Image 1: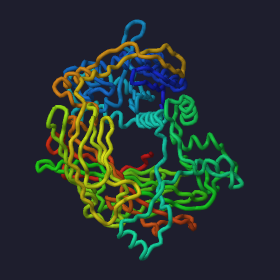
Image 2: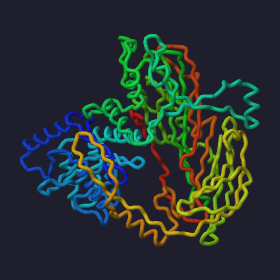
Image 3: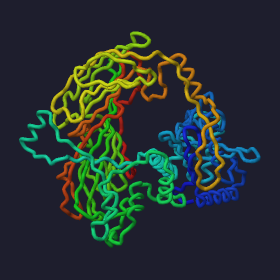
Image 4: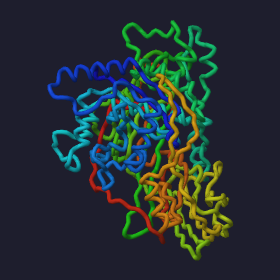
Length: 636
């Protein structure tokens, strides 16, 4: 079998465990059957696993998926061996990776168990995507031995270990990329990286200094990427119409879009190009005879069209701040930055671009990954040169994780205590942009108090700055609104008040059901309502915990108890918090061409949490010393 990735089949299930779309690839399946026949002929002993003569039907997949949820406790499973684990199950292998790479057991006419593995599980929105890549039969045989092993866990240096086995299979990585792309299509998250440029050019000099000192910052706007290249005349029709149009995501499960994407991106089951922008551009514009690269250059796969028009390069460093603020002596606050360098290079031909990354060392970068178009030398000094052959349109050139080189943009505390069963008293005391100087400016800032399991009747309180709005399950405090940003100064904000809730009413948790169709085609759809309900281990655990802690929403990602956190949202323009930067004057293009280079930065909040000082909170110990890792050739 070749080492490239091939997909045997894929399925899309709803949260009611119904298969709504499936696709099988007979060419790849034929290769799997031939490999199984060779394995039987070459091995002296009988195979200790049963290989299905054909792929299961949609109804059998749904049945097996429901059975696994009952056995493993949830769709993802526990990942480690616990008391509920049984021999032959994924959790019996005792490896956390089985939360993402699962197996399903179906039965044939003789009631023998047939194992389907490895299935890459990707959950996006209300859908579960299962992707079955092609592997060697020996890999399946190794997995079934692990499922029957008596010892618990994978010892270091063991002969057979699941994670190293999977990480050495390129088909697993390819299946994950297919699952993520299918998930983005069905949930409408197919968007291009945002490139921000100033709405008006900077005047510079004294005017910039004055506007920055009084808190006025230049407004910026996002720019969409062109979908396709040009035609022979340089002013084509369809390409020109779509050149500045933003990407419009799919809002629901669009089977036509999925069929079109699969047919173009992975014909016959082998992924060729999973870039949705490239696939859409080829479908809309086709190819032009004018898009022939120079004879001495090879056109890369990530650039199906050659650009023609006004040349320029745009860079945007977009950082996301994640923080947990405790305001406790025994628990240190934590903050971390995940960033990416977005690029859009509108350059004719197939040029190379090189520039030095500023602040790579001072940013205390933990992890780096680059687009396949980048050529990255070994990590060196403060300024690291990076060369790349840019694709067409917006793309992520580099991703990184780093520590915040400055203090938290928002710090302070949040306190809330329940004075009665249906009334709570709260207090915020925050300080914004302390220690931050121009050109850094905060574009907006909002604090949200969520109450997912209680209905808000009223609240009483007046903040020192900003406005307050109330919804059914939250109170929102807009400290700074867009258009009234602050720059070059810090702001202190306080907000005391009380909030009243409707009387508590216990809520029944939804259970999962299964509806099964009878589709056996290579590609099938099913839309049947759920009729059978069944509880799994996760439902029972949630019900038991709710008896003792009724005001808890166990599915909320940050809830330790119902009212123990507030979430902060903000945007900062004018610089990065990690220290990463790009000098436009240092950008070189080969062969040389006159093309203006624009650079911008923006910082947005991710999971920026203020934990209730008076309540319980989760905390994890982190190691003091970290080693940076560098990964080359990781596509977005």
